[in-house]
Length: 535
Image (cartoon, rainbow, N blue to C red; front, side, top):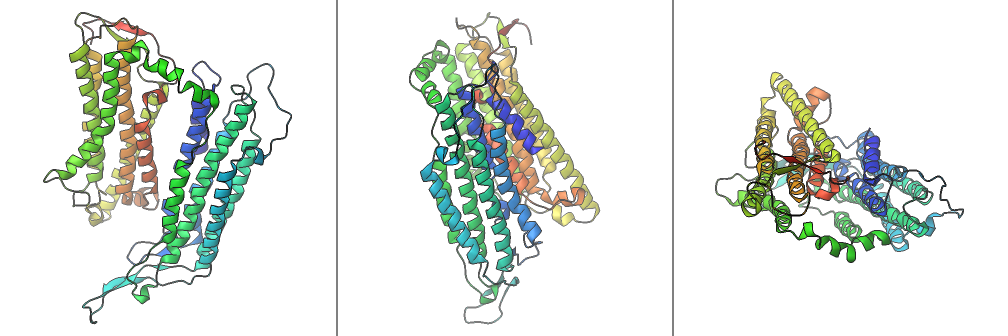
């Protein structure tokens, strides 16, 4: 189902408004492949693989099935995204197919410097995994204090670890799968069919772009495998009462991550030419873009980006507002609601400023026929349904925990009983979201000779509201999964894990930063007039 969903999203991205493909949609398609593949490549759930916790925490990453399961998601997920991305390119539509008789080889399109860098990272990762294979196991010792000693009451205990050969076998299997899968996807990229929207040179460059994004992601995963091995190797024997430890491989991974982040792929010449120079100048000098009302709406968008950051900083500085972890259940849920509410209030304030500065009495209001694009509307509906399902499952799971007498689990200050707060906060955010929509609907029209400008500005406001609600529901569902993960075992039989919630929260952040034009895949529809007295 996930592969089918990624395929449908990528097919939607590459489709031009009038049908077919263009160089711009092909470039966006390649970008989305890289972004989705990067999101699927996180090894954070497997960070403590092979570690035996010293407390009462149930060890879940100490057996080969558990470790391989945690490693399989990022490795196979990343490779699957890039493979599906190549398969999602549309077939030929012209009566005569454009084909080339030359033999395409991987090395003809491979970015050499990046390929050698990725190969070096793979070799270093393999050496680190091989080193772990010879490490012994340690038994976990519960934390406590000694009753004697010159330094008072020194603390004892610490986490243990499994046999190094077991973890090395699991990491080696993931490393081998990643290496072989990368070679297969590179071969798939080199043999990908020609796209009619691009000429032969741009088709070759697009293959180089795809290989660039694939190699950067798999190099990060390979470095992550080395970091997991380094975390295992750095753990001291708890019986030795070591004061601390440092995962040097983790620091190297951070450098690799930064290097891969800035190693940008090339751009298609046609897209680069249309995105700068005359095209950009014509866009900024168009009558609609030069209008003062349009500039105000653009400024509101910038304020929407800064408002949640300022609100979060102010909330932490105000006296009496509890910091995270201070004992208030559901605090992360309230933080997400606060961020969404501030963004929506700024959006509504923008509509009030538009009416105050540029609204003209007596001009019929105009309202766009298609206020929200189908893609954004679908995203919002899926987000609302997903959040509702998570909240219902959380409530039912916590109810079973209460019946079983585990009230102490629900009363912890980590937000595990915050589904009620989430429901109330969501209702408040939804009420606030209605304010800018009503303001956009009832705002006086702007006096201008530019056809459709007033309706377009109303559509932008509604788009921002729907986008904010979609991002809020997705992120709030992720936060609820992370803070109320104890409710999943009694109802669904799933382990109390937080990685699924982290992925949802990251998806919500991604939705929140997609620009207006990112969802506007169809041309603007003609505006239909709304009578002045209409509501």
